Image (cartoon, rainbow, N blue to C red):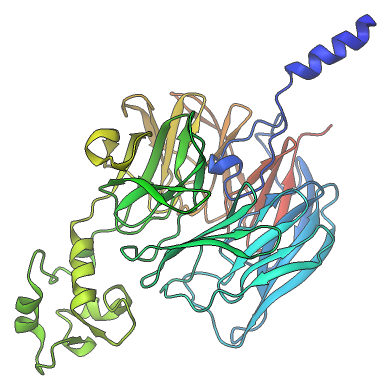
Length: 475
C-alpha cells in the first residue's frame, strides 16, 4: 500500500464519526455533537453562512442529509396554517414547504401550534402537530402517511417531540386525561403498540433510548411523579423511580448506565395559599361547597388566584373540581422538584436503590441539562449556570452568564469545547466548557428566540421567531 494512502486511511480513522442532529436536542437528546470547529462570534455580519426568513414557531431545527427540517405557522390571529419546511443545508434555500393543518380559531397564546420538534432519518421527516397528529414526508416533500390522533387535553398545548427508535416512531402524549405512550411503524404509520398512562398529567418531555449492556433497548420516559423505563419493542413498563415533580418538561440525559433527569414545577402554594394539604375531600367540600352539590364550581374557589388558573384544578374540563380532580391536585401539592442522578439496571420500583444523588436548589423550569466532557451543566432562568460533578452532585461553579441575563426556554448545547446558550431576547452566549466555565462571547441576534439550536457539520443552526440562521467558520 502506498505510504500516502496508508496515511490518509490513518487520518480518516482518527477523525470522529459525523454525528447528525436528527431529533430534538440532537443525538439521543444529549445536546452534544462533535462535528467540527464552531465560531464563538457570529451574527448577521460575521460567520453567517446563510439566513432564511421563517414564520414563527417554538420548534427546533433538525438536520437531515440535504435539508434542515423545521415547522412554522402563519396566518391572522383568528386562523393558523402549520407548515413543514425543507431548507437546503448548503444555501438556505427553501426546497419545499407543505401544509399540515389549518386552524379556524386562535391558538393558546402561551404556546404555539407547532411547538413539537420534528425528527428525521436523514431523508424522511416526521412531524407531530396537535391539530393534525403525526405526518411523514419523504425527501421530496411527498406525504408518506398521516395519523390523526384526536383531541388532546393540555391547557398549554402539546409540545412533546416524536423520536425514532429502530423502525418505530415514538410519541409521549402526556396530558391531563388519557395520557399515553405510542409507537407506530415509521414506514406506514400503523400502530405497533399503545400504552395508557392513567397517573400522568400534562407535561412536555421527550424520551431518550437506553441500550443496556445485556437485553433489549428501553425508552426512558420522564413524566408526572416518576421517571420510568419501557420496552421499545412492546411498550411494557419495566422499572420506575418515584419522587419527581408532577409536570415534566426537560429531556433526560444518559451517560452509559447513569441517568441524569431534571424535574421541576412551581409549588401550588405559590399559586393559591388557601388550597389545603392532606385535607380529605369531604372536609374540602364542607368548607367550600356553598350550594351543596358535591363539587366545587369556579365561583366557589377558595381564592381569586385559584379561579384565574382554574385549568390547573379542573383537569377533565367539566367546569367543576370533582373528587378525582381534587385527589390529583392533592398529589401535586406533595410532589418535589429536583435534579437526580440514577443508576440504571433492574426491574420494578427502584426508588430506594437507584438514586445516587439529588440537587434541589437553583433549578430551571424548562431547559434540559447537558453533560459534556465530564461536567453536568444546568441553566436556570435569569442566566444562572451551574456546573455539577456528575459523580456526586458537588457544585463546581455557579454563576451568571454575563451579558445574557434573560428568560431561557432553549436548552444549552455543547460542541468543540464550548457550551452554547440561547436566551429569549436573542442573545446567544458561547462559553468555554469546563468546571470553571467562562463566557467567551455573547452574540446578539436581536430577535425573539425560544428554540434550542442545532449543530451539524461544523455549523450552528439557530431558529428565531423571524428566521433560521446557519453560522460557521469560513472554510
